[in-house]
Length: 197
Image 1 (cartoon, one colour):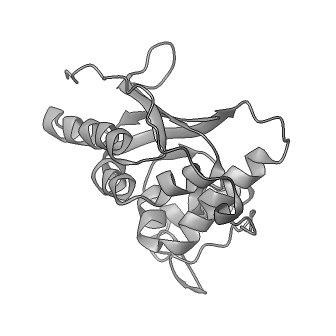
Image 2 (cartoon, rainbow, N blue to C red; image 1 turned 120 degrees about the vertical axis):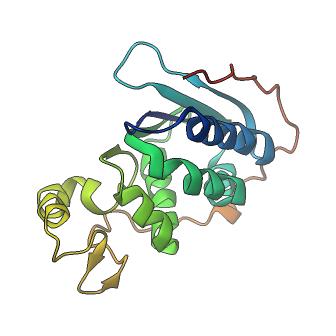
């Protein structure tokens, strides 16, 4: 079992309507993506973040389905431009010590296949997560901070071409299709409180 978790704060000037649209997108992806067994979207208490979401997914095959599902991509388009600080992490009961690397490889595969998504993530002021791209990649953070402040170097672009990032810490050799099938039965879905800001 994998619990995929995100925590975030929004940029100053984000309207209540924009925030509610982003939160509704998160709730919709929990409802629409078959591999999501349960989810919760709401206020984040006890830390530096304002909002959060968790999605319960059975296995890596389901995790890949979650990452590339159109409902997830739509939430990214709506919500990521509003985000100031973001952290993404996973909790799993899988005893295999390579599970974290496999999850990171799936994220890297997604970033590699979607330059527009990578650019959206690169536009976030502070981002932590699996296979973080561009200015957020740990091994390139100093280099990218310099590029971000320079008008001559476009964000998320290298000499290799637009949206081609130098950080490729994880190569995905994992084939999610080779894993056991994701259960089709949906477990209970937790409802989220209404956003009020």
